[in-house]
Length: 198
Image (cartoon, rainbow, N blue to C red; front, side):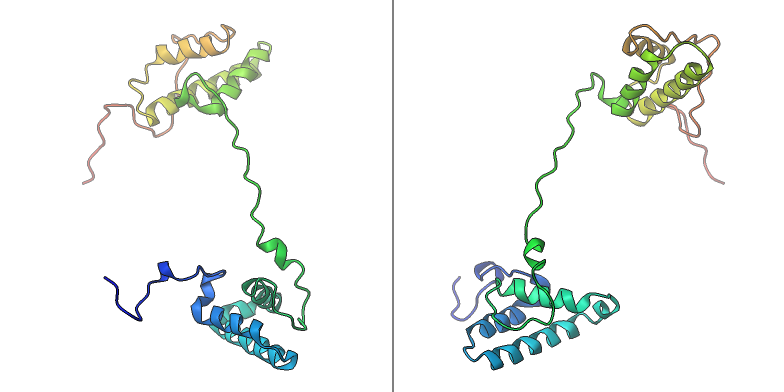
C-alpha cells in the first residue's frame, strides 16, 4: 500500500541521536544551512534551549551544558560552524565505537563444573598435603556437588564427585567417602520433595 504523504520511520533517514527526535534533528539540519553566522549562532542557542527543556532532569548533572553542546555538534556531524561556549573536541570520541573485547575461550572437559572449579583443581595439584589442602578439597568437593545439583546433570552421586576430583587432580586428591560429609547448604538433592507450606 502506497499512500501519498504517508511515510514510515523505517523509510526515513536514520537519526544520529534518536532521543531528541526527528524535529530537533530537522532544526539542526536547518541551522547548518543558515549562511549568516550571527543568525546561525542564535539558532544553535535556541536549539540547545529546546534540548534542555526536553530533559530537565539533566540539569542536576554538573556538565549538562557540555553534554548538550556536544550532542548538538554530533547531530550536525560537526558541520555547524558557530562559537561553541564549551570545548567540543571530546565529542568526536563519543561517537567512536569501542574495539570488541576478546572473550576468554576456555575448553573445560566437563562444562557443568565451570572454569572456577577447574582453577581449584589446578591449585590442588600443586599444594602439599596439610590442613590447607584438606580445607580446599572440602570446599571444592562441596562446590562440585552444588554444580551437579544446580545443572540437574543426572545424579549428584558422591562417588562420581570423588572420581572426578581424583581424575582432574591427576590422582593427587583421593576423597574418602567413609569419612567425608558433604555440606551443600539448602540446595535440594534431585528427587527430594519440597515441603508444602501450611
